[in-house]
Length: 113
Image (cartoon, rainbow, N blue to C red; front, side, top):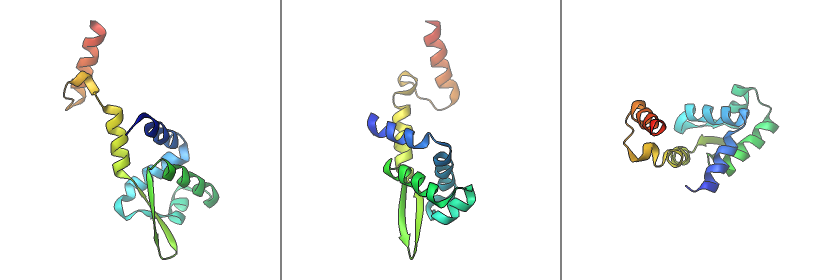
């Protein structure tokens, strides 16, 4: 992932409804959800939902498949994993971060120095 793609993905998630849609699709897993079910679960009008799904799709965070007459939306886990990896790249000055304490210790040492 590069900086431009990260900014696009973060920008797509930086809105309450889009974040809620993405989190709902993460919970749905590989089975995904139809647009109508997403709208009903979140109480978002279909017209607004289409806009939000398009934004998430353009950022590569959501994919869609047609099943008969329905569009099924799924979270793109590979894209989200790439975004998190990009954000965490070179974490903790190269020290392995198996737990929160490793990162916290390095940060405290940097501040103290």
